[in-house]
Length: 236
Image (cartoon, rainbow, N blue to C red):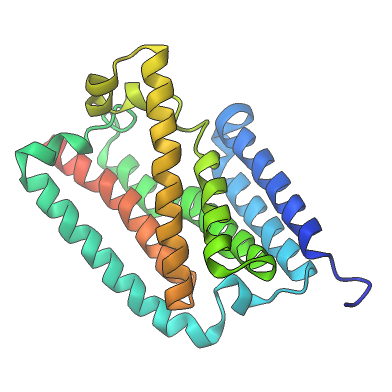
């Protein structure tokens, strides 16, 4: 190994440190800087992978897999759109789209969330981090399955701070678990577990398609189309 190459374990520690700092910036210290934080943190993570001897293919953005990744992306966006359409049409699931965080937003603000805030502030950083850099580094040390699980556990923990008020933001969750501290803790634990499981699915997509575009597309569709459908239901 060349003397100048950063060891894989050191790169892992540095990547987790970058993510801890980004999480605190996004949820405690500088919430209005979320887009800048996402871009800077993503660039830092990619730089760490490259310093550890990685390349675009290991990240999941190699030229030879972009076409397959794009095909997966289109299919996944279509599937999510179809599922959301069914959910919006059925009275039993329609309430799941209600979210206090977006109820007062205008159409332009929802469009900004769907087309800028979600793809840059959420999808770019989280997919580069958990299905790109961390997954790639962990695969050097473990099997693909173990790498996916470890990356997904970290993905779940990443959601501790942003999920603290979900029982208040989501009326359906609030009615199920209440507005108490205990209810908030239960919902937060559930969010961490749910996102960890979702992380495993996203890692599988990354591994199966060979491209980071597949989990990026699914991640964007779930978040952005959810905002769009919720807004359209409010207008109806």
